Amino acid sequence: MISLQYEAAKADISPFISSFYHFEYEGQPTVELERADRPQMRFYLEGQGETRFGNGTRIPTFPVTIFGPTTAPMTTSIPSHAIVFGWGITPIGWDALMGTR
Image 1 (cartoon, rainbow, N blue to C red):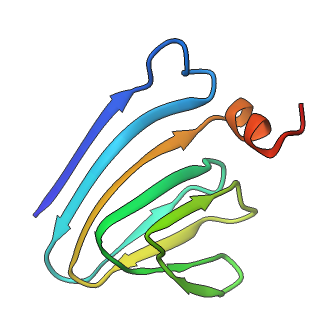
Image 2 (cartoon, helix red, strand yellow):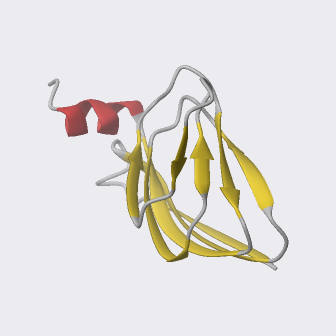
C-alpha cells in the first residue's frame, strides 16, 4: 500500500517551501530515488529506513532529518513500513535557512 498526498505551500511561504507531503508505505522492501537539487525537511512518524548517498555512504533514517542539496542523487530504502511527513525547500528557502542572506 502506498499513499502519497501533496499540498502546495500557501502564498506567504511559497518562496521558501515548495509543497508539503504525507507519505505512507506498507509492503515489501522498496527504494526511492531522491533528487539531488531539492532540499527537504522530513519527519518519520513511524518506521525507519536507510539513505544511501552518491558516494556510497549509508546512514539510517532519523526521526527528524533535513537533506540539503547534494552533488548526486541519493536513495532512501524502506524495509516494510513508514509514515513520513515533510516539505520541499526551495533554493531561496535553503539560502534563508543557512543564514547566507
